[in-house]
Image 1 (spheres, rainbow, N blue to C red):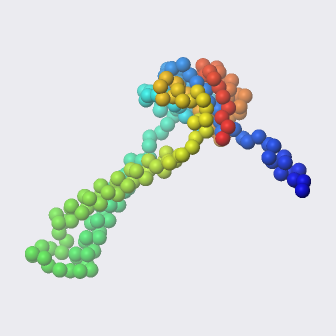
Image 2 (image 1 turned 90 degrees about the vertical axis):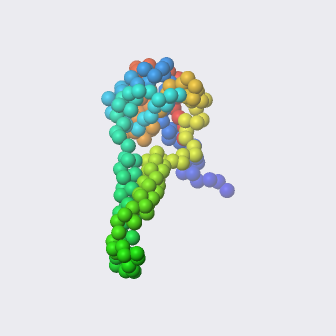
Image 3 (image 1 turned 60 degrees about the vertical axis):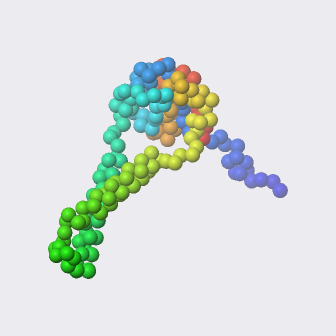
Length: 189
């Protein structure tokens, strides 16, 4: 049985690349490359180095994290939820005078409020980190790049995703070469 011409054309068509990766000589060159990419209008790129580099976030144009807002929301939800629950139970639903205390006794409610504030803030921190960092990511195309293993010892890399609106293989390669990039490679998915 012969296969259809469209199925053969689809199977033979090369897959779109994931992006491009370039290696740099050191941290200074990496910061300069990140700044040049940001000024050129690239937004979907990342830098990789064996240690944190001062100023790389500013060079890449990275905004402040949204995780603290998620933690604050979790903490406020936990504290106010605990207060509301205890108030409802003691002052509305099951009114009972215990040891002459008033129905709404804030000092007695504080330990539970504190615990739920901390618990939901911690859940917010862990959940926010996982969601905003797209974790767990069990595979990344950079892992197949043979030189990328050096990133844990002495390698400095920039990777640009093909999904970036400014990505064009030829122009991106020229830009990376102009800012000192070497070993420029197109990454397959």
